[in-house]
Length: 421
Length: 161
Image (cartoon, rainbow over all chains, first blue to last red; front, side):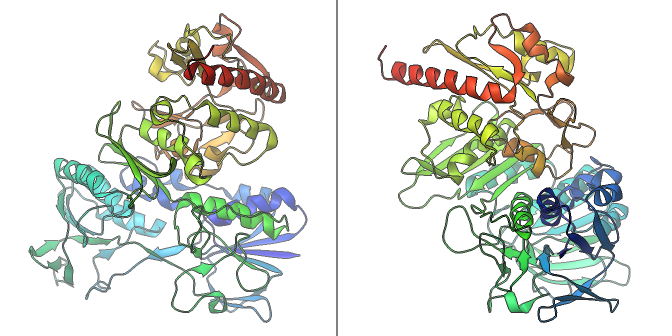
């Protein structure tokens, strides 16, 4: 049997390793458009911030692929999947056959509809090449504008600031990090950005971008006028790289829809990671959770099922954590309350500057923590409750770490080999 | 593999394990550097030391975006390579037990590594609450003990004896 994996990041690697745990004989090929072994996209801002070396970005060596006996086709771009002949068509004209296929093609930076965004001086922070290009532009005193205020945007802004650049962040919505924080937490982080000397403009639309003959980029916005900067970093979200096999898409909806087995609607074709629209732990319609942990989980399920293990995914739960501007920012699930939800909010709990737990009928559904790193650990302990929709023992008990009932369940996990997530 | 098994009924909350671990981690006795934490509940007269269980299916290890977490082939310990850790804190959010901690001075995550097979916390335990034993045995034992402690705690919470 020939198993072919397109992609070389979290989902592809988890699938590869999960598959090989169960099947040591099938022939496996991994195809990746980039010419290098796997590196960690989520760590690119850490490289720009000089927290990690270039070498530190790489998470697999060629010897790791050899150990898993996988044939690697690095630097090979797939143009199309032919489901009739079960072949991949590569840009160099070759065709690679498969019996089972995993599409773990990830996502790309979304391009907002702003005139002039394809000119010189406009950058993204998505690939290794992007990071090395930005690295050479990050000269002290240079002026950079970041469009968007998600994790990538703000981490790029932090890296630029750390390296002595002047930084302007422009966000269309009224708050920064709209997908990760509620308005109250966003306000605290916003103040922190200002304290670090970042010029933050929320509720600001970018009307157009022009690059001058002297290399300066002129950005015009509504309200606050025009800016002249040395570079613009576009970080306004991601869109799935879902174009290889149009047969498995639903009209008008981005992302490859997958079942809980990570199978697509096309026989023998699986998908995992950012490219998918998959089941969530909350039930309801499928969603795109383009997050590293979701990619790892989906990859693991896909890898198992490529080996016919019959594993079902319990659904993804959005979770985010990073440090920026000296604060640990973490959130989980649905952290904006609806009618009928209970909200616990604390403004200073052992160095956690903002802690919010949203629950419904005693079952936690989401949380935010801003400040001390221990807040991330607290959300970690909360995660199984959210995911499995379990009643939380009374809150003070949980906050003190006395949730023995949960630990008891967790201990059983060691022996029974159930995933601790 | 062997893990550090905890018997809360024997623990007297002397915190020697925390001091021993902190000293091993930092060369100092600041308990905040310890990877084992003793939760002490005065009212219930209960204390529960908590440390990494080196899960078979270790989610922290799988999810680390820096490939900084691996399993020691000798001891089976799930351990963090501080040189590879970028400090992203994904492992803190991944651990369902709160057993990964963040070292603010170095900016990296830290957790129990079983001291290479000779855990200092167990060595320094004065009451026999910590033992370094086979994981399977530990699970059965701890289930039993924890079932009992939990029942006792719940009764005490309700004001019953």
